[in-house]
Length: 179
Image: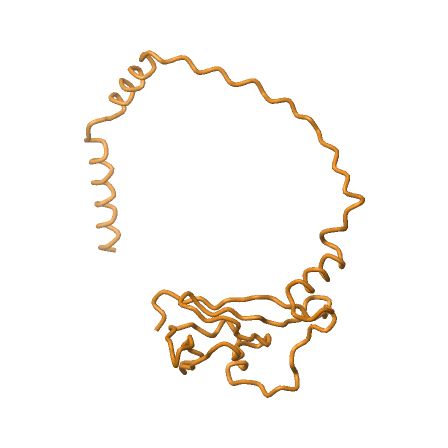
């Protein structure tokens, strides 16, 4: 009961005090009047619009850039094998320990030179690992193709929505404040 009375008294005091201050409404009105009366420079006329000339696009003699042929061409230029249907992971080889982790859960901690080669230090589930070109990372058969100061570049082989094996290049970058 006492608290309600205190709140009521505080509310009444705040309401009374809110009407005691200087009204800035009059100042605002004077400023608006002065701004409206101030001389204005005339607006520059707009440029005449450029007429739209429709162009005819006829690419019926060109191959479809989103078709299977273009996709096959991409695979043959970016994969060492000549036949894109031969892209598949090496299932017979022995898996390496870091292939048990998703690439998102692996953090690049640093890089260093060891015996003249670049080596990356990566952390997975609290453990620190050394990896170099040729090692595998992640669940998508990611093979390390390059290690430099900016990060690690991987060549992954994963299945797309149609079940075909595709090659994609992924990188693991150094994170700020990685501990």
